Length: 312
Image 1 (cartoon, one colour):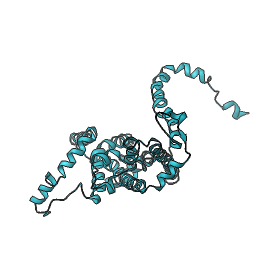
Image 2 (cartoon, one colour):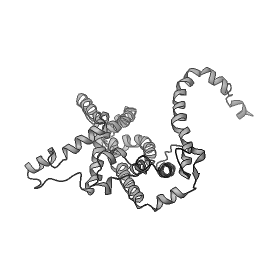
Image 3 (cartoon, one colour):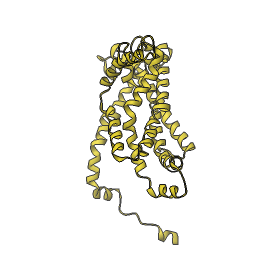
Image 4 (tube, one colour):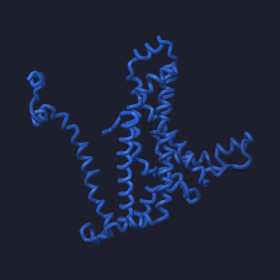
């Protein structure tokens, strides 16, 4: 009886709360409409993955073929090559590129001079705002056999002959990873810097009074406070393992390095737009979506078991 008396009464119903918050609810309506139009309605188009879709016949008139497109996909060796390249490049991104913003944020946070810190932050953001077409052109020119990198290396007698960076398949993956680090590290560090700014200064002051040095303060105060954020971002990024990076594949890839640059999104694009195999391309995209969902669910479970942080 006492517990029943102490329980708070529910204030009004859902409709009453909606009326008191209607201005806030209206602000979210454009986002909901955007999701419905561009995310949920197009899901109906996935039905053509199970059809021999013809534009002239439409959704209702095209022949239903069941899983034939998926069977053909798993029999195509080019698909396996694209999937292998996609997974390797995505793993490199998760293991190398993804932690870089965290490390960079820690370094920026430890800079004692505020003016220099702002300069570093501002300059590190700039590559993110450059269109990747310009970034790719810049790096292609820099790493050209007659470009600045090769000319400088030969002048310093580091190499005797120019290195064919963009025609050597084995160099594409490290170069793609390097470019991703250069372009996105500064921008990705923003969210970690914001999280670091939210840590109570009293914790650092107490640690300093106890004799903790800079490394110990980072290890015992900063990193533990960033783990929940890092875990959530990891869960979200895990779903991109079967997505790859289409910009890198198209703009930095060529017929010489196709062995390592050809990703599954490029494969799907060619099947759909170049060869007009719309049903087959949809089957490939559906496979990607299913695998991404499985990876997000697994990453969410794994993060919960290891760090205790889950997205849902």
